[in-house]
Length: 206
Image 1 (cartoon, rainbow, N blue to C red):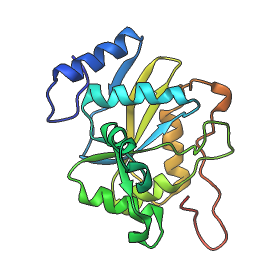
Image 2 (image 1 turned 30 degrees about the vertical axis):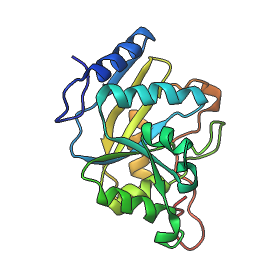
Image 3 (image 1 turned 120 degrees about the vertical axis):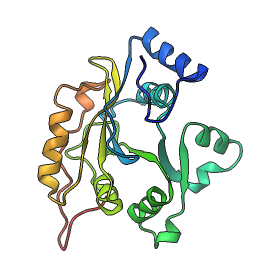
């Protein structure tokens, strides 16, 4: 039986998306969610091709997966595609230019949502993850859904959940455990799941 978001039933479209993944050798996974709202940390993001298993996972599981982008990208005709694949426009000006606060406000207004973020911030290798996703979850008081883009085992979806405590090092250790055997499309581009070092005067929310 295909993995489905709680309360959802399979549709012709979700069955076709599941079939497409299987034909391509992929499995859609969805650890039982403990709630209705999450920030989704999708990793490793090492190639543009990650988009396709990710979007088919959304369609196959009927999960309320979304991502945010600047509102200028949602003008016609590109906006039709952006909204169709789960995009949500964000206006930083309404939150004083603070991106984390702008996303938190979106999470708070939605009855259910998986706000997907690629915390590596690049498809190339970096030294650490950006921490904006972590503070989104912490401030919105929701868990982090750890979403694997696992080209090694050809599986895509949520492996587990981490509730942020404010102890970022301990919470990232849980994330690393969940992703321990996950390999990206281009393993050499994987960024280690360690938090961006704090800046002088406080933690970094980017």
